[in-house]
Length: 247
Image (cartoon, rainbow, N blue to C red; front, top):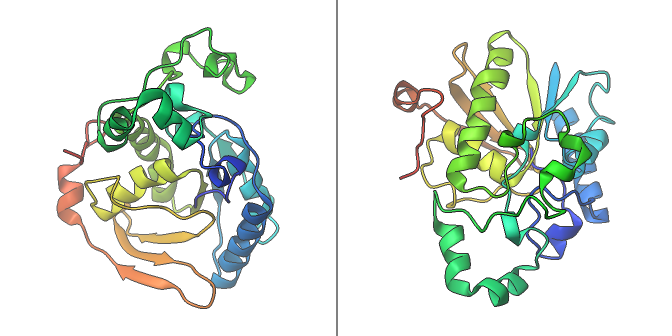
C-alpha cells in the first residue's frame, strides 16, 4: 500500500527521499485504509516499510486496526525513487530551472536520471542519520526508473518472496514508484509510467506456493475490484536480478 497524502504531494513538489509529513487528509485516508483491511479480514505476519516518515506514520495509523505487535522491517530499498537535483522543487519551478524538454525527458525515460546531487549538498542521503552504516556506494544521488527497478526487485526476490514462501502474509507500506515496480512485475505491465498508484488505497494479492499471483483485489469503500490474473510466461522469463520488463 502507498502511504497517505504527504504535504509535498499536496504542494506538487518532487519529494523523493526527502522526509515530509502526512497531511490531515493523508492521515484520515490511512485510517480508512486500516478499516478496509480490518473489514476485509486481512491478517498479517510481518510488515515491510521504507525508512521514510510518511510510510512509517501510515503504518502506525494502520496498526490501530491490525495486530500492532507484528515485527516491522524498515529498509531504504523500499524508498521511492531519488529525484536528484529535483528533490524539493515545486514541479512548475523545476520546469523553469531545467526547461520542459529536459523534465519530459527524465519523466519519460527508463534509464536517464535527473542531475545528481553533489556529495556536499545537504539533501544527499549521506548526511541523513537514517542511512548511517549503509555503504556510501549504495546511497543514490539520483535515480532512473531502471535504477529503482533493480533496487526494489532485488528486495522483492531476496526478502519478501522468501517470507511468502514460508507461509507468511506480509504487509508492505511504501511509495508510488516503489509499488509501480512491484505491481508492474506482478501484473506484467512493461511501462511503469502507464499507471498510477493512489495514496492510502490497499491492494491485496493472493499467491500460489511459488509466489505467482492468482488474484488482485483493490479495496475501496463500499466496493472492491477483483482481478483474476495468471502470468506463468512472465515468471518463466523473469530471473533475478536481471529482469527488466521495460524496453
